[in-house]
Length: 357
Image 1 (cartoon, one colour):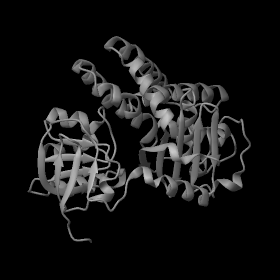
Image 2 (cartoon, rainbow, N blue to C red; image 1 turned 90 degrees about the horizontal axis):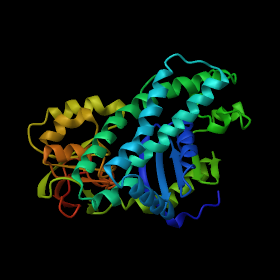
Image 3 (cartoon, rainbow, N blue to C red; image 1 turned 30 degrees about the horizontal axis):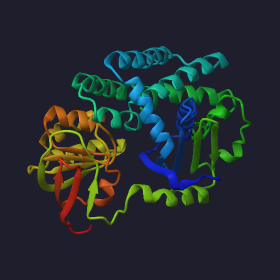
Image 4 (cartoon, rainbow, N blue to C red; image 1 turned 120 degrees about the horizontal axis):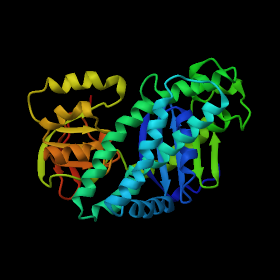
């Protein structure tokens, strides 16, 4: 791939996202003329980067669609209609017409859902004095976060059932192989080489308005990820910066890390609930299950998120200092570190290191 990597910035990461979903999302985003996005997945660890011009385009688009409460309501009505259509598909019909109708609405939903992400909202909303609009968009982001999980990410979600059904029509019975198909392959627009599906452990998806390009070479994926690692900061740093989104205060406390991968979350909640002392809660992101722990925290620090993230909205409701979007908090901080959280400036400083384990 001939990508000029110097103008890309890290946007978000996730674990266990199948190629089929990232492919659908990427094709959905090509409807925006400004999009230029590189997704790199190695060993199921996904990192997504946006070109500088794409981020500027997203900011401008966000300013237009969220200029007022009226325009925000009109814009987000598209999400509601697409979600209602997708929920109707409880009985999977393996016909071409059903698959194409599903794909059209799924891409419609994803395209509009993405406009609630920080690239579209944060620059504009930080300067908006209309707290009613901010509260409304926060409520919508929380509500549709649950919807997107239901439609696309939980076990046996509609998306996976549709992909499995579509793959069966192409004589692919293995579910893992089905999730490694690209959207053009699922649509019948490109030939499927079944012998290659087992080898698609790692991949790159490059999305632009002109189309989507794929590469399944592990060495190329590693090269691009290493080249773009500069966007994510240096894990040896003694401080990090993010966006302050709630109570502006200085807090000192002990770090307690939380692994928010779905397979670990239940055990992590039990572990943190057993702690009697107060602590600074540090995680990749937060979810509704973590609210009781967030309520007990001195402060909250996350890798991901923006002004409309679950962490930000919850911290404002709880009046807890919160810094989001640090990108590398869970890499830099150790469980037991003593840190200072300056939620006025959006800076976390390590005061005393915990012993390495």
